[in-house]
Structure formats: C-alpha cells, structure tokens
Amino acid sequence: MSMTRRRLVALTAGLAATALVPRMVFAQAQAPAAGPFRRDPLPYPVDALEPHIDAKTMEIHPGRHHEAYVSNLNTIAKDNPQIAQKPVPEVLAKLNELPEAIRTMVRNNLGGHANHTMFWQIMGPHGGKPSGDVAAAIDRDLGGLEKFQNDFNAAGGRVFGAGWVFVTVDRGGKLALETKPNQDTPLMDGKRVLLGNDVWEHAYYLNYQNRRADYLKAWWNVVNWNKVGERYAAAKAGTLQV
Ligand code: MN3
Image (spheres, rainbow, N blue to C red):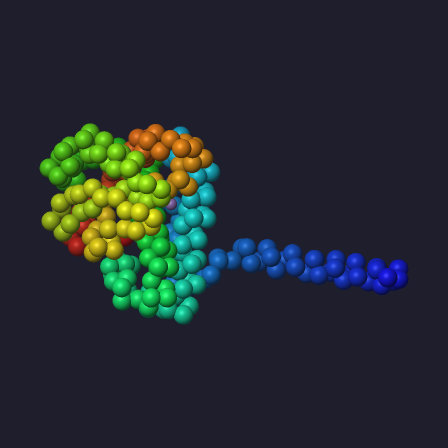
C-alpha cells in the first residue's frame, strides 16, 4: 500500500469514526423503540429506599430491566397494535386470544411491565404501617400483620428461580397470598393485585447476593402503606388496573 493510499485509508476511517459518534449518541439519547408503551418515572429518587434497596439497584432495575420489557412491547406493537388498544389487565387475562407467534413474548413483557409498574408504586421511603380498611382486611383474611408478613416471606422464599409473591384482592376486598413464576401475574387469571414483591435475583443481588430471605424481610421497610390503602379502595371500587 502506498503512503498516499495508507493515509487516505486512515483519513477515511477517521472520518467514518467521527461521523459515527454523533449518530450513536443520538441513538442512545432517544427512547429505545418508541411506541404506545411507556414506563412512568419513579415517584422517588433512586437512593430513597436506601439502605434496604440500594441506589444502584434502583437505577438498573427500572432503567434497564423494566425498560427492556417496555421496549420489547413497543417492538411487538409495531406489527400487533391490538396489544396496546385494550387495558393491560384485559390483554393479560386473554393471552390465548393473541396470535401464537407473539403470545409468549406478550406474556413475559406485558406481565413484566404490569408487575414492575405496580412494584415502583407500592414502595417509598416512608413506609409506615397498614391502617384503616386494608389493616382490617389483613387481620380478617391473612391472620394479622405479623403472620401475613411471615407467610409472605416464606412464600417468596419458596419461589424457585425467578418470580413474584403477591397479595391479590377481589371486588369484595378479600385478600389472598399467591406466587407466580417469571413475569406471570394474577392479572392473567382475571384477578387484581394489591401488592407484590419481585424475587428475581436482579431485584436484590447487588446488596443481598444470595440472601433472598434478608431482602424479603428488609423490603417491608419500604412498602408505602398509604399507596397500598389507595389500591385497596380502588380494587373495591373496580377501578384498580395494574
Ligand atoms: Mn424485576
């Protein structure tokens, strides 16, 4: 290769690299796969749940894990707009009506979107204690707060691999404990979720490593019982969505 040619190649490569930089920055700054699905911003700063849930986890978990579900949904919705045209609980309760080619993807990603949307909402830095109607329902249906929390933690501990532990609520206000694998949700059975905890390792591994039991126990410090009370009232009014 002549000196001139070599210089030309280097120059061209340099130009190409320079030209690529702004485009990459632009692509990153844009929301990945824009579309009808959106992730709400956290209602508190990422470090608000410290020391129980660390700031890094609260960056990565919503920003990458939940965001990936949203982005995948927007990609699916390009050719299957019907998944965004009905309320999320309705789509999840009728997964078998979707084309088989997208059914599992919608199950995983819309389930994940619904679960995480609920999860960020029901946490907060000033947890407090259950009160009013929801406290009475916990006493009536779940044997009181202490028994309920022990049972919930035990159920969350028994989930093999990735999944969730939930409290469901029916239109009459009756509560029940339930676990689901992966990103499944009681919404898929036409039920409503009062609250739930994510026991995927990505929810706790940075701070707790394999100690899921410690995470389950500490998590109660960041449950926003005011918000849970609002969800309980909404469930009874028939307006609770995800
Ligand atoms: Mn998660």
